[in-house]
Image (cartoon, rainbow, N blue to C red):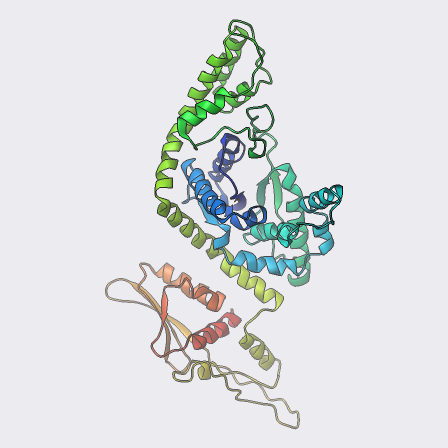
Length: 466
């Protein structure tokens, strides 16, 4: 089995050079590793916790998606999607919320920092704290556990959230796993060697410090203007300079070859002026960023292309998430009613439900009890219930089809033509396993005169047999 790696990108800002060196570039390189299945998502639900500006959220989602694609993220190799396009994520969030102790959330760093700030200001402990902020670690756990990610690359400040996800997963496994682990326990992957670029003032490059160098925004001119503002010492051209620890040199090293690094250090010690060194840095960064910036501009001019990529990524992600959530729902008892009725019948209970009555045309959705125990309390063996059946076939034009037929032979569901038998078989398997949840995406239509409720009941009966 491939190792699964998951990375989320919060959509509240525009990426800068520090983001590229510290997060984007290493993550894209990691996604190309063999035997690795990568999930990259725009964490737009998380963004709502921090930002109440809809236009900023919308713009940031577009800019960040375009940035990752322009920097070389291959959507054919990874699942690249918006968090908000995966309805299974909030559904799982609620399942996890119901097994998560409030005391665990009380210990979350972000929540404690907010309450400490309130107390320091003399405000009420929870003033201005939303349930989104308080429950943030549970949503993050759902992001991770929905895809059973083995590894989650994070900064050291996020390690606690991975530990919380492990705690929540263990609790869920204990309550509902019946001896098996439904969830993989994720591991935090802290990249100690990942570069942290200094900003213009020497502090960590961050928008909160207003000291960033733009990655694409503003073009080459904005890059040159930002580099010109990097703080250096006061030594003039001709004076030897100390390259070690200089912000300009650290930024240069993030893009330079070994030979280029050595050359800049030697030249600075020999008296190269800071202005000339900045020009050298601009040229070096531009050689790396310029081609990506052109690709970024093209994508920003055609947001429909980004939309297509994200929608395809969501389909890829949901192909994993849908059947797994269906399994989790069954584990906690959110099962089709027919499954309970059939289980009762197998145990010698008082009622069985025929699928034929549900599926018959003209009586769609009607469920009729057909057998009850005698009033004396004597139990009789439950009658075998006839089930609907999927049938697959190939037409003369070479296309493959499948259909769902009720126990009485009437047609319930008909597929459109598919190019290969494996695809048709895959959809049949999903419909049997996931039931009505798979109808939204399946290439099918209801037979004429058939009520959707009848189809859902038939699929529920089949799912109960899986």
